[in-house]
Image (cartoon, rainbow, N blue to C red):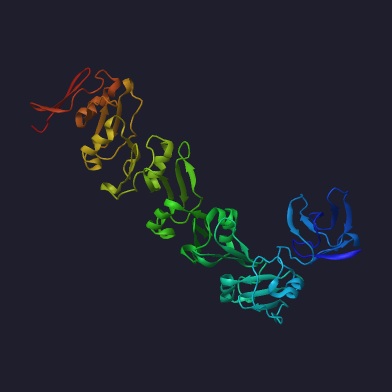
Amino acid sequence: MTDLTLAASCVVGQPGFVASFTQDGSATVLQRQGDAPVAVPVDARPGPVRVHVPAESLGRAWDLLDGGGRVLATASAADRGCDGWPSAGAYLASGDASPGAPQSLSGLAQRPSTTPDGTQVFRAANGSFVLPPREDGHVVRGAIHDRWLAEGGPASRLGLPTTSEFGVTTLDGYYTRFRGGTVYWSPAGGARAVRGAIAQGYASRDFERGTGLPTSEEFGPLLRGGYGQHFTRGSLYWSPGSGVWRVQGAVRDRWAALGWERSVLGYPVSDEQPVLRGGVGRVQHFQGGSVYWRAETGAHPVRGAVRDTWDRLGGPNGLAGMPVGAEFGPLAGGGYGQHFTQGSVYWSPATGGHSVLETGGVRARWAELGWERGIGYPTSDTFVGLRDQWKGQHFERGSLYSRSFLGDPAPVFLVQGLIRDLWGQLGWENGEYGYPTSQEYAVPGGRRQDFEGGSLTALDLRR
């Protein structure tokens, strides 16, 4: 029996063999492909795992599997480390030639400097070969090496490398992993460290394939202890109260224009998600509201009581449609409003929130009358299911009724004052007078309005 040492997720050997470990690390099975498995003993943890391997199995490669059978790492013979770079002995023996190394070092020193924990650092003209005790060595080079040294090298927050440099498969860049984070380099962003909660969010969103490469350092602390970092395909923001989320595209541009996390929206609490049937729109939720986007309308926030009302109507798939502008106000009486593709939502302390839809020309007529400055705020939503397909709506100082259809417009009638009060007492459109057929007009001694079942007159009591 001969001993082989396993460090973290590494086994030394050659192709054709698999070392499968139990979840607690107490035993392993050694198997050549196609052969029956052979159980071999494993020394107790902690520390590097030492597997006792039959002498005839030496010089082979191994896959390290977890208890469920997933391949965690594949290692070739003893002249290679777990990430495919040469082991310390092979690397130092070959010097600049470094067989199999993706990137070699130039002018590698043969005498290392040693850190307090026993790590050997072999300096070179364009980087360092770092060899911790009882671990494989790793190459740190180029701009990533400069960034690591600028932070303090082995004694920095980044600490020792856990991989050598790798090329980014989907983008023009490189990365090296360290114990305290990962340093990425790209032509667009230079060498930038990604660490902590933002690094976790970056990993859960498929690293550079999902969010691109970093273009800034992590910045903060921001409002309420948050942090952020920009990438080529978006930004990641984290705060204790919201977690870490990605903001990108037109939604990010809109959030930035409002003041980032210092705006009324606060921090994101979700990633961007599809909305509308067919997913042609996007939405992202924030602490203080949501930003909705569609190509035809742009990105706009919806928040507060206006959003509550809009959500009650079905949100982006409801009667009002998608936002076409931001909330505006305060208006008369402390109200607020917002326009959508198929109507508007208005809220005031006195009336609450209601929709005013474009159907039947109700919103257009309200606009002609001066919006909330004319007949006041809506006190009901737009009625779209009235008898004979009429539409109507109540406002503080009047009601609008219409039987307009697309391509066959009809007037929108305003019923107000004493005439509206009387008409309402008589049952509105379902009473004996039915729907209005004229606008209100002056008659001797007062005002009159015609309806399907007759006319109602309001006398001028001041005469």
